[in-house]
Image (cartoon, rainbow, N blue to C red):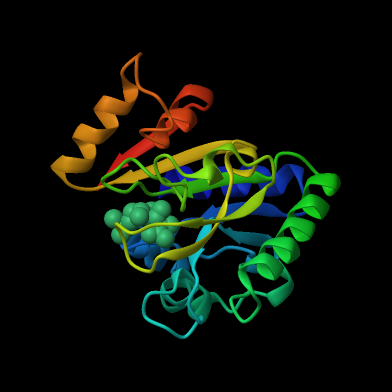
Length: 211
Ligand code: 6PG
């Protein structure tokens, strides 16, 4: 946590805002709850959710629901600082809306993320970039994806083009199975279409927290 706070503070010394990418799933929740207890200029922090299940924000399976319970409901961010998927729209409309918002952020300043917090699935997926998905080769910043292996089949996700546009990348890993998948993804012959985390490891220096 200290490293994250240090990065936020250093970023805010140089820029008007600090941009943090937040993944969903179960693993990051304790970190978000701890972050909510910190004393930070929340009105200068922009939050970008990395992916979403195509459900309404009040549903248990929603990533926004989890992040709101753990963090947003406690720090009361300005809605203008939230870059999230609007799942009241069709998936295509939600993608187009967030694509435009992220393109604007990119025009204002690079990189898109000062800090990107990622989890990883037991199949090596990150965000909702699943193995062998067409989303892996999208040239957009945001796209749709599908899964039959995890909660909620229809997804919305940031792409590699967005996720790799990051200064600091943090990966939260829990359990032996994920550690083994991560080791496999680190091997020279790993293909990111099989293990999507691979492309992040190949292109970014990733700070790994084994929880
Ligand atoms: C999601 C997440 C996803 C998550 C992994 C790991 O929508 O599920 O954004 O990428 O990080 O699926 O999830 P757990 O932390 O629940 O194992």
